[in-house]
Length: 261
Image (cartoon, rainbow, N blue to C red; front, side):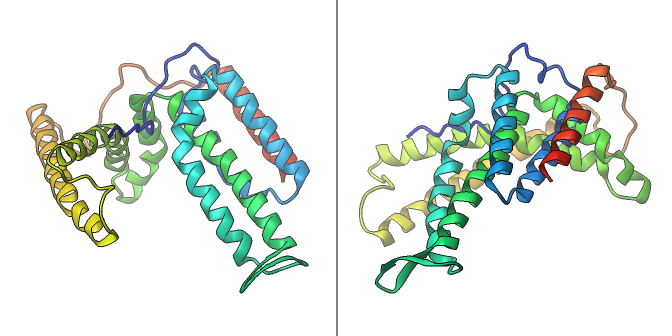
């Protein structure tokens, strides 16, 4: 059973978005993702999708790579949209299905909420696909550094964020290997009753936790061997510098948000 985990994986390409300062990509990406919650009408939704497709074209990443990285999340959103369609009772009733009903408000909510969240998810995927884990760490470190002035561990928070992204694919591979081992021993999770499937998950979780602890212990030893010390001042091999392309990208993002809102 293969688990395709694309979160945190970098897709190399020569594009204007790849060459942007990672701080600009993180800040603008978060701002664009938050801006989708201001989408309330069809023109705003159309503008959001125009911006999304423009970013996909500028990133020069094949659409199948982007869609493959968000496929599972989109499926979850589709299921949630069905619940929204039946849960929202505002507007005129269109269809009665026994105790359930579909109203104009529910239909619009299922349509709008799902499609605007797709925009946010694609923007997040593009940000991760066009930025290496090292660049994300440097950006997070630079953006969280003011927290150190008030006694919060900004550098350590950025490092934990980087390690989280780094080990998601690793733990996905570990889970795939554990599931294959369970299936070879006759313990496939997709067979039997619901109670049997839930019981079969427990050995997988225990093995995955043991593997995670082993990786954490190895990482701690590696950091200790390199004399890592939290809070120490460090220099960078490639210092982050803002260029005119970065300022232009930030200005375009601000202009888009102003027009959208």
